[in-house]
Amino acid sequence: MFARDALGRLASQCQTTRWIIDWIEWLPWRIDPWPPFRKEPQPDPPGWLPAQDLETVAMGGAMHSLVQAFGREQDPGPILNKSARKVEQVARQGAAEAIQADARHFAAAAKQAEILAERAGKEARS
Image (cartoon, rainbow, N blue to C red):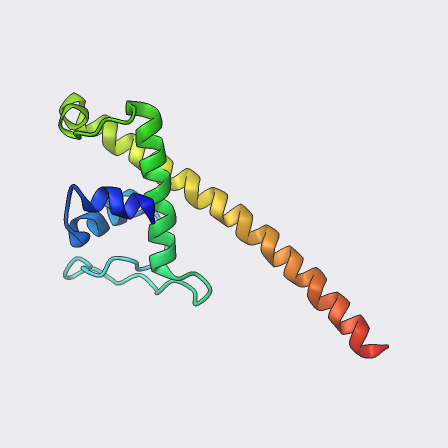
């Protein structure tokens, strides 16, 4: 949420969405609202994985990594002038790490849901 606000001060919503899609293009699902022409479309993400939530997680991770790498610069000009390739690399890494952390959190929540379902089943049978 905060990352979207911060990026929104620099670029339009469409541009920030494009950046995030580029940073997480390795995902096996179609998350790009503007897919390339004449290319086989990827499958939609599973229903339990809202694309906008994934985008928000990736954006937060990218912004966190950029702040860690370049500091809390208010004007992005000096950062972008250093090396666009480095900025891209840091953003991609941060997005990937955030998605990994979110996946671990999701797996832990799923495990807890399984335990809850098992207890509810035992309660229903007693």
